[in-house]
Length: 157
Image 1 (cartoon, helix red, strand yellow):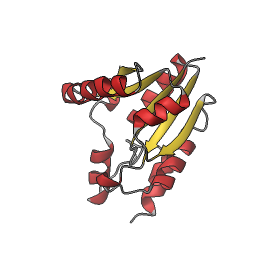
Image 2: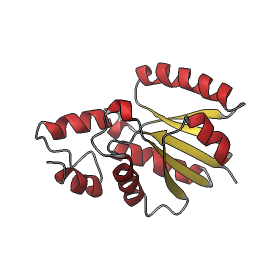
Image 3: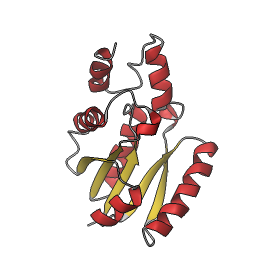
Image 4: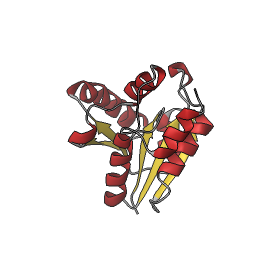
């Protein structure tokens, strides 16, 4: 059984994230979505809220499990005996950053590989940061996030 992990802050989860999750769920036996606490990023949603939003967004995917974490990703990977780390890639800038993390994580996990999935064209320009900015300035983000996130955002106004 292959178990992969898809880590991120998911503040909030976007349709682009869901695309990566759905595609990973087709490729691997088990997918763990690891929602990082990331307090230094000053998230709009707290960790518990983000975990719940991801769980609700992925509820239909039987082989997907969601966890929250505040530890070093490598420690989580080692503890859960993960086969590979999944990372979504939108741009070449993402690639440079993700390549550094892949080398670091491979060292810290005694060889666990990172697998890069390019986003589909439809979501290549969408990021949680952009969604938050549009929302905070009163814009409509309904085409970029699942309904459960829209509901959560409406409570942040």
